[in-house]
Image (tube, rainbow over all chains, first blue to last red; front, side):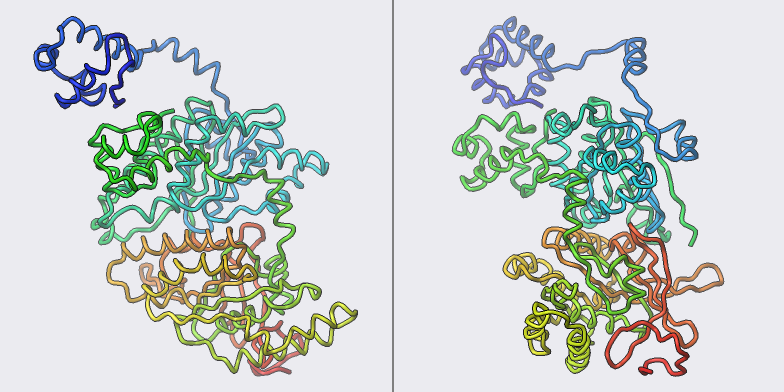
Amino acid sequence: MVLLRDGMCPGLDEGLVRGLRAADIKTVEDLVSSDMEELAQRCSVSYKALFAIRRVLLAQHAAFPVSGADLYEELLSSTAILSTGNPSLDKLLDSGLYTGEITELSGGPGSGKSQVCFGVAVHISHQLKQNVIYVDTTGGLTAGRLLQMLQAETSNAEEQMEALQRIRVFRLFDVFSLLDCLYGLCGGGLQRASVGGGSVKAVIVDSVSAVIAPLLGGKQNEGMSLMSQVAGVLKTMAKDFNVAALPLLIKEEFDLKWWSRSKEEGGGAAAAASGKRKRDETDS
Amino acid sequence: MQRPVSSFSLSPGVKVKLASAGFRVTADLLHLSPPQLSREAGLSQQEALEVLQAVRSDGGGGASMSALELLQKEGELKSIVTFSSHLDAALGGGVPVGKSTEICGTPGVGKTQLCLQLVVDVQVPQCFGGVEGQAIYIDTEGSFLLQRVVDVAAAAVRHCSLLVEDEEQRVAMTTFTVETILSNIFLVRCHDYVELLAELHLLPDFLTGHPKARLLVIDSVALPFRRFEDLSQRTRVLYGLAQQLAAIATRHLVAVVLTNQMTTRLRGNQSQLVPALGESWGHAPTIRLLLQWSGSQRLATVFKSPSHADATIQYQITSDGFRDSDQSACSQPGTSC
């Protein structure tokens, strides 16, 4: 989906780009998927030259296959398992949060999702001495509560301050700011946020539904694509930078009549992006 | 990584034109000038300029801070005292500034009374431990009674003048009178949800022009939404409303107080009183208070709070306002003993 520009590869000059544009070939995708012979005739270029350009572009833009064995090796050497600080939760999650994966927390109101996230953030920053990024979209984060939890782990004030410094907080309230933030993190923000020798090991988003839910359903058609983008960038961040991503969703009780009307609002699409799920059930 | 153009906050028409011209990722746009872009994508000059500005401003998500800096900032913010010491203790000092608090309860239990008390309490001078801010009261029910506010304000002034100990407090009392209290309350009357949403859209500009505002009361947020026919649209609107209120509370350092009504939920053969507007609304406010009757005693329960455990306290409504319940046996509720 990259636009064709002159100088992209040898043989692709201004004149050829203009000729291709006139033949309605604008992107690399268009060029690679069109018929070479017909195109060569229409743009009055030699078939060989066009074929060579196509091969170079494919080599530049295609993904390379990796063998399963190499992938396994890489996984063993780069994945870390982060304990959440709660032994029974660790047992449920198969010893903890895996970096390179998205773990989703969903639950009803007041069920304790934010509290679990505070606990995870405090544990990672204090015990594991690694950095955490906390994206707060609801205004529910109080540093006083984080301090309270730290005070239960250690009474040394300096350690508490150091642990608090390793937690980076972003406060934003709509989906475009969230996308700006996540893309910014992917584009170098994660390195900048690494403080005191450690690296960012977890990204917590509290909560993803708060910013996406206003856009789903009704006559709006952007909601689904923005939701998929958030999921995509979280997944890429998790894989490429070896962090554990932890988005929070809410759980709602649907009554069947309303659910069938709003079935196309894509309740399942967000879940498909996350590898592991954990539910907090409220009994009310 | 490549960022798609559709992830920016641009109008859908512009996005469609950019996509059909082949511009899918930001890398395609970065080296173009506005006239070039408007020619290639068929956009107007203004639109092309906006697109390039959006794509180039790589803010990285805006300001971030470490949790330590956040702790220091929170230390500077005071809470709004409610004049009921038990409730203040349960809330950790009072209604916190910068967060949204919901008060739900059955009719007549005292939600509006608590709101009127807060509207006076937010103006208590700082030397008395108050926040010394202005209040905005959005009234959707028509339950704002001026005479009651005068009574509560007069009681608060009397209370503070009894506490005066030094010169600074004496000077502060000259500006803390019933007239100044009333002049620092901004009252807005909204009749339906459209007016409420419009008011909230205009509020950020208003708050920028009134930096001393520290309290926003919406009494009640439930009434305009109870007559909605399309429930899924109502949920969407409420989610958007919740995010706007969270943004206002955080960016302008305002305590947002919302009043909610109660509704009945049927589970099999049993019915239960629950806060209105559905479970999805339950995620929106940060702190939730439930006011209810227990026999002839009024109780307040904190049932959602990120920093304090759930607690139930007793209170009473007197002619002076919202106060702690008298420990000495007082047979009639609502009278001051």
